[in-house]
Image 1 (tube, rainbow, N blue to C red):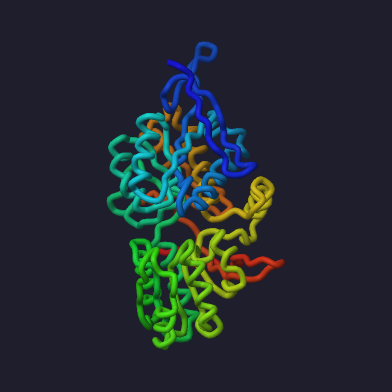
Image 2 (image 1 turned 90 degrees about the vertical axis):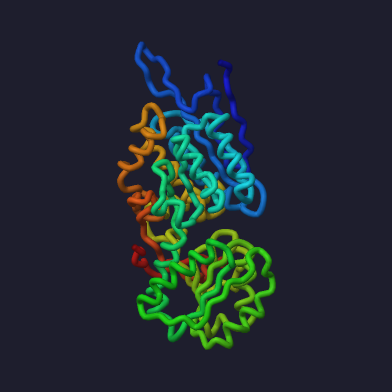
Length: 397
């Protein structure tokens, strides 16, 4: 068959994507060398948002995956990698067909990425039936890797309930009274609140009130902030991300709550570009997450410095999750010479501990990371705001 080539558009200087020509149309191949068969190049699908509201997250994930490749001479498992990028868009209506194309037409050996949980849930059955590996580097819905998990779906990021549950006992200990719960009214918001509430109440915490705001439609939070003030709450737990996180945190301070009613949340409340947009308004906000640029370890310091040099900005949790997806693929492909889904699944189950900038982690029985979570506090540092690491939290079970 003819020679296939893929041209991928970069999002910024320094984010060059591997461009290779691959003979044949199989996602993985065997080539003859001195009369022996050796593993040839391997094709990996990268499914992230390249357009729409989630594009900044997609850019971070793309950079993180590419950064690992750049550090390893463009190879995973000793095999030269061809990356085929596809636009996930903003939901299942674009993401699911894009994933299917990567497998059926582009013949990708595995697909990495996926920001949106609804997209991930919508493609689960396709990957299960196709016996192809889907390695999720963000989407956090609990059900993705829950009781009905697929052998072919793994995750290098988090599950909503666990990242929120890690914060519950700490808030119960720190809050001087009942806590108000507020989040965007969609699946992730409800899973985050449920995970937090379970461990918070188990640790003796009391809830002052609970409210879900219209998702993607709420710009004026004043009525909800008034309800918080009238509830007698001594602290607030919240889940917002993106533009809503920026508006909520800024208005929380403008409304006068920040100085007297501590604000807590899961880390997406103050992560990456969101924190940059919030600026000083976010100082004092405490969150739980499995990564911060401020982690004081030689591994992370080296990673942050190298990433800044490559992309002229700090890495985010989204970049680290994709970087680690490349790292586990590197290990798995070394033990999956045929590149089949069954080989990769078996190899992933045996990768063992992953030496990550976030700290060492490994896959649990549900194909999720068993990892440390950190209590982060936004502080001013050198003219910027950062998510300083206050302590390590107990991982939720």
